[in-house]
Length: 392
Ligand SMILES: *Cc1c(COP(=O)(O)O)cnc(C)c1O
Image (cartoon, rainbow, N blue to C red; front, side, top):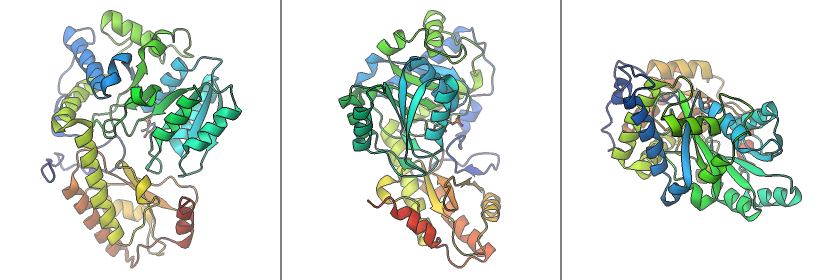
């Protein structure tokens, strides 16, 4: 399929960001009509959405259900935590970036006890550390892992985290927001209780809702846990089962776009093909950027096919705001970095883009550096020292 994706119409820039991202024209076109939320046509769309998500999780799918919920991804994370962690539960949050930190804050808001394993900006939480914390604190009931921590782009080692959690007899919750649809995630094989993702990441829909995939027995037993009516997934599920409807106004156009995106995902070849295209995007883009002298925060084994963090060049002629504008003028929206120690920026690999687009991104970066008079894209020594932390 490489080199054959149509350009986004209407002269829009490509969004090299982790969602909202560049969607196909058919996905946009699917939103050009209105649906009644009660109407059978829309209820059929909701059924198709739930069935298609479950079809993506492998042979253990019959033990799981899919419950969509209105709002951005963070609403779905909050709904998952509030509905499946009982009020007397306690969560070990594995944090190595902004999304782990956000989940920890969420637990404070909703009044659930927590402990945080904080690995800073980009170090991965390892299975042995999780095992040790769980052994030393029998009151922990749940572990929350971030699949791809989008703030650095690191692909966290969910298998070893799952193994440690399973061995200790605790429940595993996964924020797979930016990974599901492009990276395999088999909750039955991992022993994962629930995971969450949203419409506008690797499935390439538009923003408007998230969805939680959860073990049916846990879902059925979760009544009365939630701290919030609108984020009560048990109530949402019961009403959806009984009436086929969302409890409150559904994001009808976003659902229509998502159905189109799910069909395109299947036509492309499912999770494996989507992940392969993104990995190719990353490989072409990273090789090209390294060729210009840029360096990645992460070594190759931790690089996700979702988004990549680059260090800003040390050259005083480099200015990120200017770089951003020069890239935008060439048709590419990039993303600022989130590292606290050194300056960085991020380039996403997900969305309706292929390697030809990524080659154009590299050419645009090259031209932008020349426009700014940057002679070397090499990062400062502090950045390389930061990266060494991961070498162990
Ligand atoms: C995008 C994302 C979220 C949700 O962010 P929203 O802005 O609320 O959609 C949560 N976790 C991760 C890892 C993400 O990438």
